[in-house]
Image 1 (cartoon, rainbow, N blue to C red):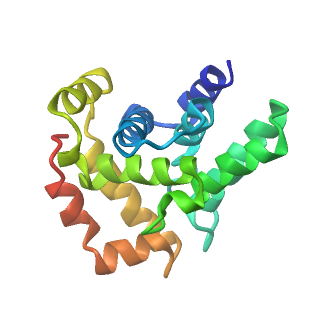
Image 2 (cartoon, rainbow, N blue to C red; image 1 turned 120 degrees about the vertical axis):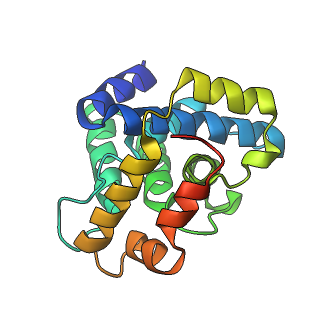
Image 3 (cartoon, rainbow, N blue to C red; image 1 turned 90 degrees about the vertical axis):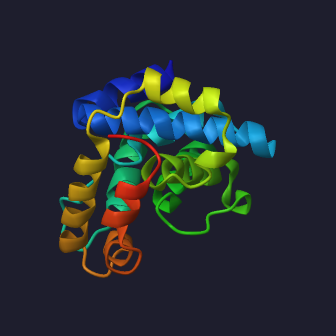
Length: 186
């Protein structure tokens, strides 16, 4: 029930490309959980995935989009009377997902959201996933121009939040190039 309502709320905010990215981030995270034998709360990871990019680009100068996305998720979970411990899992996963090196010690949902988003954006660990999984996820949730749209959003975020995580990725990790070179089309 909560997952369905989170998806409906995300549909009101995200473009089709970002909505499908959110769905894929969940699917990739769940696939990585199976590979790494990580136990997690499926519904909480799904809620976090639906909201993880809702603040992109940040509409507030100098506030990282992950903070804005986490705040939107907190508002949603507050309205749905989600217990505090679970709200923290969701908001922490969102706030951390764009931070390099998030491990299981940060929480299963944070690790899986970060890893799932990294598969979808940069192709990280995609070669570890079975071909059938990669094919099914992209077929079920088409990319519909995601690379182009996301690259533009990261650039906008880098301008809006100088010295934020997107700015560093854009400047030092050449995010435009690494996104373009990711193994998925579109």
